[in-house]
Image (cartoon, rainbow, N blue to C red):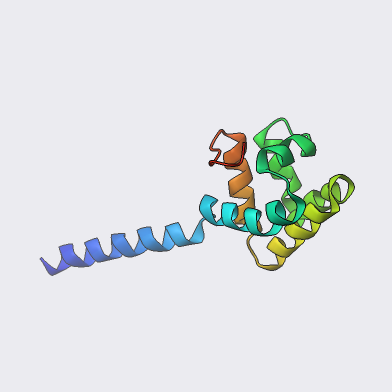
Length: 114
């Protein structure tokens, strides 16, 4: 009986720790709105179009090297958006932003972002 409870507790603990370690779409949405959309007045779907990426793999390439390619490309397109992304990087939420933008490309578009 005690062994079963111990296994259940371990399973719950592992599930919780795994979900905390993963990037979060909602956190990425929050940070995008706060630092990019509010400053650059650029909806996420517009950003995807301006970046000119056609697939999720192309988008993920921009997030390599701590988002440096993304910032460089945004500097040419919209400097205000680039500054917003730099702030998100400083906050340590780049992975969440990536998860959010990948979700947008996969059709998971929240209200007000289209």
